[in-house]
Image (tube, rainbow, N blue to C red; front, side, top):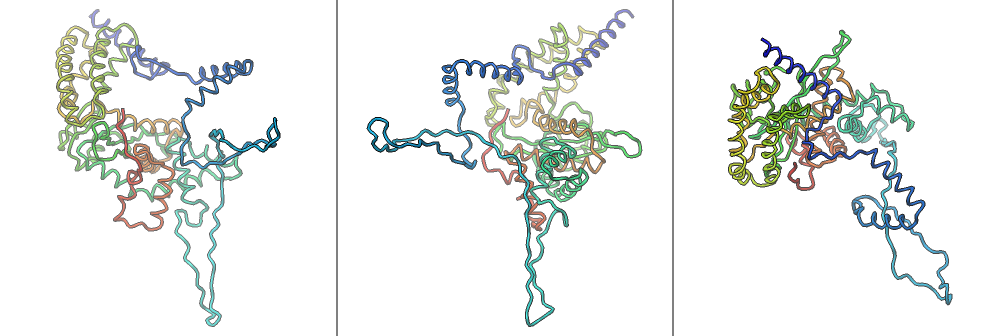
Length: 491
């Protein structure tokens, strides 16, 4: 009884440490030996000190200016150039007073910025009449608009969408920014624009997810989406399920993409409904709903080593934990192999994993079982070990398939913008708002994955749909159709 009480006490202490770390501690999970944290404030203070030194010592100022010219790189060629000529007034020789002639010039470039400016697009439609036929009046039809009778162009609406879903600026903050430039737009007006755009873009979102679901390998994750619950004076917890594809680490030909789907709850029926018809490998965390999906459909689950590592990291960073520290070191060896083979073909990755990673994994399983028998079964360490052992088949799936990743970090990265937007916007106004969130955020995130400017993309797609773009060409409206450069493998 005493041993059990002590084990329970240690478990509760560990839970308190985790809560304290979550509330007050650092979020990065890198091992201490690899840590490097650059603080913006420290760099600012350093720059201030350099400025003081340069003001007092012209030699240092000249030397640092020379180094900046060497290291600053070149500005993008597509940016417009505004040329300024700084010339001498007197072009006669100071010695003989003869005429000077040009022998060359020094050219320097600096980055300038013009603050965002509003402009008004005036559309005139002349009317024509026949002098002989009094009732005949001919006029060109009015061009279609996203907001009929409203004031925004498609580019303006795209700007609002990107500011909200890519730059995480809630609509009320955008309204304040516009007001500073003399344009008074109510938050409800901006919300109306967003709702109309989301409705218009639904077919593109549906087609995006359809194309992703046709792949034979997907990443999946989910995150909370607080939604206002009318009549109760509080929010309810909805869910945004994220599904992503990124074959760049092994040189796959399919373009990367991410699609979010809103659901009012986290029940297993949601991913089952979303992934109906999908057959292949699904890379996920430990959420039990995906296991139900695998039992019902032709889906193989590949589990995430990052989630396994996280549980041992939480134990190791809160105090001396030799078993957890050893587990982290063994998992780090797996990630070292992955770092070296990233960008190789699927077959090359598989061969390297069989030769180097499989022995590490083969030794890790019996070691974990041995350590599990030495610790209290109620401890957090035992919980971390059981988490890994209960998912061992899915954790080892990456060894036999070079297309499968060691973790689900691809979709974890796709979830981060959602978390940032959630922090700034606090909640969606309704379930419909959650669906708008999913539609537009999917297109914005896929643009980012394909190095496509979301502002230009959304403005063009909205304009083309408003102008009755044929539905048969909807594949031409997907973000990767706008990509102009080949994509590289990512970490």
